Image 1 (tube, rainbow, N blue to C red):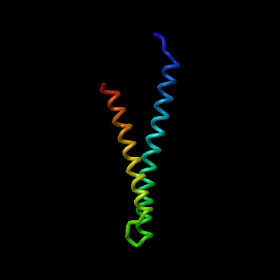
Image 2 (cartoon, rainbow, N blue to C red):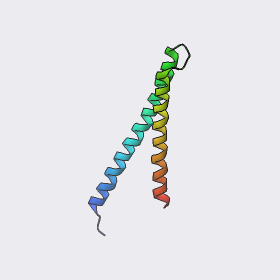
Image 3 (cartoon, rainbow, N blue to C red):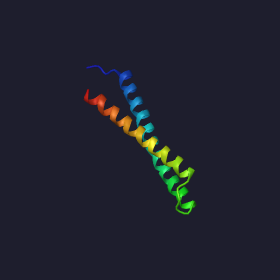
Image 4 (spheres, rainbow, N blue to C red):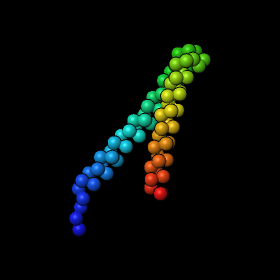
Length: 78
């Protein structure tokens, strides 16, 4: 039995990068929601432009996370 170390290293590297990217995107989404809440609180309970931008960026980050996970599941199933 022979182990292809280059292929194993490639799989490890891609998995590491994908994991860090996915966690980073999810973290950006959480930070965006926190900034939205802070912007709403700073405006006395009314939603302004800063809150809308923060919410949009948060939802975009979550959508990218969902797309990445869905693509991973697609690759596993197919």
